[in-house]
Length: 312
Image (tube, rainbow, N blue to C red; front, side, top):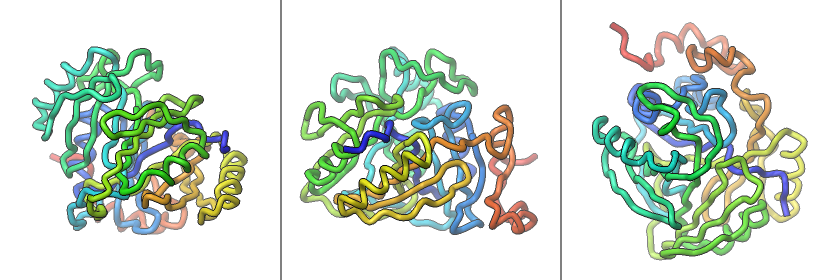
């Protein structure tokens, strides 16, 4: 069994409008934009990161806003819902706030004994806020969200699959433990995680496959401390028969990728070097940072990338 994984690292989704995306995650949800950079494979497209003060593993939601991408179609073989942890007793505040910001598909519910507020981000992403007692992670506060309400980081991600058996076994191999099943959903928990410790599996054998697009999760990343731990995880996955990429330098972490039996793209990402490698923590995300191979494009990109906030 793999012992090096310590919960979630980040979740990356697709979007269409960078300005709307930035406004929602910073102004509405109150997260900090910890990095504005570009897609390694498509440098004319932003890669935006939102999280806590430093972009700690287990707090970071990232987006690729492709301006002309079609809307995604929900189905199996994807992360269906991304869930964030908020303090106990704060859902009333969040319901009022999301109503005021005209957020769609609001619904209060309960899952595994926890209170949830379900909603959709502007481009269709299925998300929820989960009341969690005693989440000790320090939140980013601002934009009208105080410490008693602010998002602590991820709570969980719900996978939608046609058959959950092989993915369940994979997650157990990755250090997760099956906790319980309720209403047809299996919850797995990492006993030594970073706070973003839950993965749920919903099996929908008759559902169609998801189509990737705006509002879809592109991949989900799990955290390891460093490159040595990542190398051990990669070897264990290869020895088990998974096709895993070599380590790829993503500037703020090193990444390896592999496709799960259920079709979801998994990443294993290092906690090092972190988002302060190229700018001070006090000023994370304020200016455009470019990967070395795209540095020569700065004059063009600064003219063609849409400003994240309207200029007067």
